Length: 385
Ligand code: MG
Image (cartoon, rainbow, N blue to C red; front, side):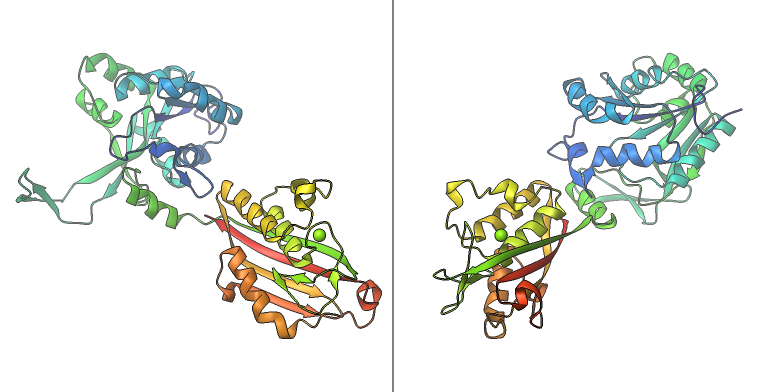
């Protein structure tokens, strides 16, 4: 009996990513999409249906070591593709360790989204009928267009469907088809099996299972994936120090007693910097700007914020909101609030509408209440860029 785990050679997954990307103009499989690449999502989606099945990824020979470094730690076997699609698929299937009666699901590495239910439905159909293909209806009227750009005919769409992946086959059926194929080239395995008169069951799948071919496909796909959101918090404390200028949120408050510190001691920007670093899991401000480093003596703390934003950008994250609370008996924040908020928004690349700035005293309690220093607490939200 077939099992869901595929551990006995009953079921295997082969993801094909060996082609070139002529239409896209770049490596479409490595394009970022919702915190991973198109190919990572393709592997994840098809694997979600059978998490324990042997999984083989077929890649272009030039990228074998790079892909192995990325996917082998996930338990995926990476093998080289061949000259034609069917050669690549064959290399992958041979590496999957299936017995002849086992079923292989073949998925296109450029299809980052396939629902678990569709993956399982194709596997069930392949077990029943030896061959199955996921298809989607064609809702639009279909035209045949000539090379001159003129419509030649309207094609009756009754009975037409788009072929998607995964496609599922009993190994024995694929072997017969490969042996019969000779030098002919096939764009999908279902067509290959059809060519030897094999019966292929069509399983209706989700229309969002799109093959990323053009940039617009990727943009539409990115909009459909949930965006990754990270929230970071940062807290900082600085004591007052006579003879120092007071900087808060990148604004100098004239006539106020300033804060002690190695840099300009802008406690607010330090808390914001730490919040951004926290959201990116990039350590804290002391790691990046140690007080022992003379470069930061007297530095404007805006450089710390800019550095944190740069680190976030390297992780494909951008700041979308900031909320800051200052705990201080002095200075009075009210008269400077709008200037501080505007400057903070500017440093973060946000509209002032996306920057909250609040202040409270501590009712005379503790070191803030005794007017010994200022506390800043920041919460910053980052989204996938
Ligand atoms: Mg500090």
